[in-house]
Image (cartoon, rainbow, N blue to C red; front, side, top):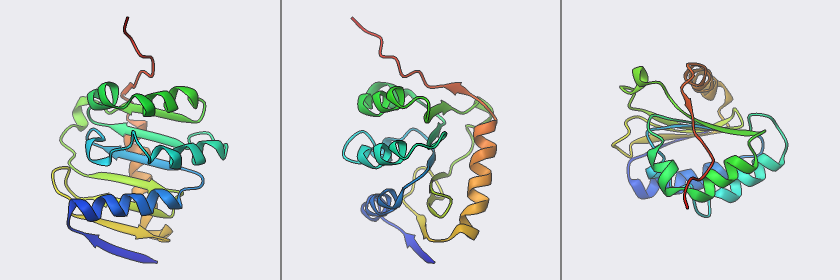
Length: 157
């Protein structure tokens, strides 16, 4: 088991790349709005690999605010539309807007936990299924609260 404290945004981005490279079956993301994660570029290849592995619920993204995803992440939205049978994104209910943490959980074994949405301070957990289990349960509870599904249809002229 590896446990690392992350204290800068640059280290956070490197930790995110390390984490996503480990993904084989499932990625669960709970975040404010995905701005800090920059998922609409080269990181999409990790999601494509996980989705191609063929598990239902392979990619789940829960957001407190989906505006950034809808307006700045066309490739991620396209991926969600293409793989809608294995991927989903939803905006969490308003009563959960006070939550300030973020988490990216991979395969029930690895995770990157950011303690506050405005700070890079995080912990990276690799091969730590016992530690990750509680975060997976928390993500499932957040997901099961429902919310507004993110539309993957692009409107325009």
